[in-house]
Structures are given as C-alpha cells and as structure tokens.
Length: 201
Ligand SMILES: [Zn+2]
Image (tube, rainbow, N blue to C red; front, side, top):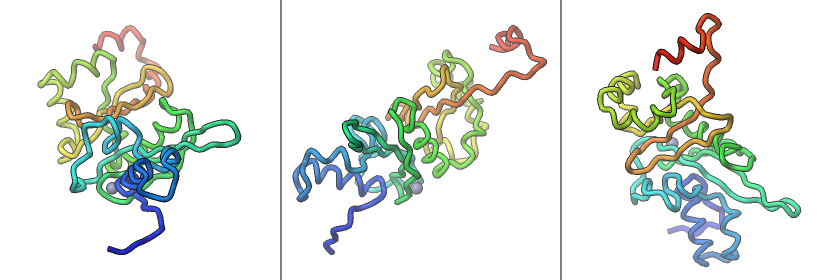
C-alpha cells in the first residue's frame, strides 16, 4: 500500500473518502464531510440507495450523481457533477439549488457518458405511462425493443416528457434499476391539434 495525501477522484473513491472523513478516519473535521464530493443520497452508491454498493465495480458504465456543499459568505450552496460507478469519469460542475436545478444537468452528463444518444430513446408521453408502462409487459417490450442492443440490461434510462420545467430526474432503485429522465415535451407540430394528440392516448 502506498500512502498518498491526494484526495481520490471518481465516484467510488470520493464516496470512500467521504465516509472516512465522516467517521473521523482522517485529520479533517468530521462535520466537513458534506463539503467533500460524495454520492448524492438516493443515487446509486449513495446513502438511502439500494443499488451500487457491491464491492466490485460494475462491468459497464453506471451513472450516478455527485454533490458537495460550499459555503459562500452566509449561504450554503450546492454543486453537482455526474459520476460513474465503473470508472473514474466525472462530469463538469453545475451549480444549483437541486430538485432539478443543477442536479438534472449532472445526471444528464452521466448518461451522456454511459449511454451516448439516450435523448433519442422513445419517451413516455403521459404521467399515466410512467406508472403503468413498467407493469404492462406488452407495452414495455414494445417500447424497449427500440433500445440499442444490450442497453436495457445495462440500466439504460427511461425517458419521460416532463410535467413542468425542471422536474427532477428520478434515481433508480432495485425495483426499477434505471433512471427516469424527464425531458421537455417537443413543441406540437402545427398541423396536429391538441384534440388529435389526446386521441392518440
Ligand atoms: Zn464510466
């Protein structure tokens, strides 16, 4: 083992460092842990997530979300960046308040890394779809048959039209091991009236 004072990078390395700080295993004060890059709770490999805690890294690129808090003056601000549980890749830093602001961009970066072209996946177009489609085997098979080979097994995301601007992306869990990414509904085509669109569903 070599000793190094450099902080590790990559989602797994940073998360390990975060826990070491939190548990008082480093000279840093334990309450400084939130200021270290770490996996956002609820996202794979982070606290309150039931995914991403295996000892061996996954065999394929696996998106997750990193965060840290920064004190600027009196304000506590958050920063976000995409991470990968399989490799040391990290995305650019985004500032924001969370809940879709900053965190969404970081999650999208991580998907650009793991699933380049994910924006072209067939979207879920209604709120009902989000709930019903994963339980409807026929429709699920139809939708996912349009995914590139192998993507589904590797946790490729579901893409859903958002219900409002900045709707927060939903992290995966063991029951649904893929992110649900909310994208803007494309503008309606001029010749299609709203009534006709409704009729499609
Ligand atoms: Zn990766």
